[in-house]
Image (tube, rainbow, N blue to C red):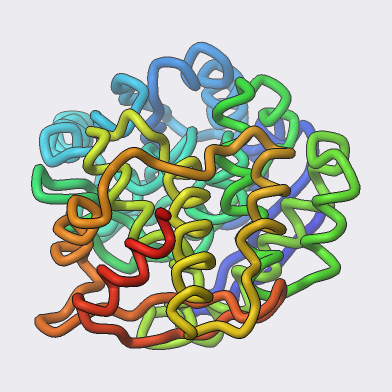
Length: 351
Ligand code: GLY
């Protein structure tokens, strides 16, 4: 088992390895002294790992409750959030108790937000079961729910007490869900490390899961350690996300997060080059790796439609938004742009 320490205001560990769900009760007990644990999960993950997690928690002495909601981004809303809070209150969870998020990004984000606000904050543990959640959303304490107006518009920075990434859970992921996580995995290569990008190009990710998850968690740890509250360098992690979020919203979340981020990254790489903001056109190299991992690289939404949604992105200000521009594989920069220029970049990026 690998241990990676995240040095936020309240530091915590990310544990990576095989067979960790069965050990999770003991691992959580070493960090959290709660009497009661509330597992929050979705129906699909519950049918796969709910029992094993619960048995492990009970064996370690926790009294256990479980809240299960319907799988999918459509559940990441205020209604599910308040249902979790009402359930926690009905089971009389106290400030000394904890929540355990078992699942992918939706489960982790909504449980984290419920934990951040229930009784003004109780402990929570992330047990990510998708590649996307392991390499990105379970680490760094961004918690949120969506509003009708857009994704992740209500939330809080609230760090977990522990993250347990059991890489065995990745073996049950469908091709699409695995590909989703590969979009965020490839992102780290484009942002920080050409060698890692080449590794992903030349090897099969599914055969190197522990290495890949560990590498990505270390990239994310370094950024979160430097900029926990997303005031500067953490913005780099939004590569492809501004346009990506617009695609997700316009498709009514029919296009998944990873797919949308992949398309968004291609549009920004190509558009920024064509607008003279980047010296090299990296789009074909990026498209090649997305093709390898079965990720889409284009959209039918028009530049005007995409821009309209980008204007209301939570990162947008009155005059514009900060983009992440890929200058080379392994090197990106933040760039403040206005909406006229953004339209131009998206138009050229979608040509
Ligand atoms: N997923 C981007 C971040 O955690 O900042």
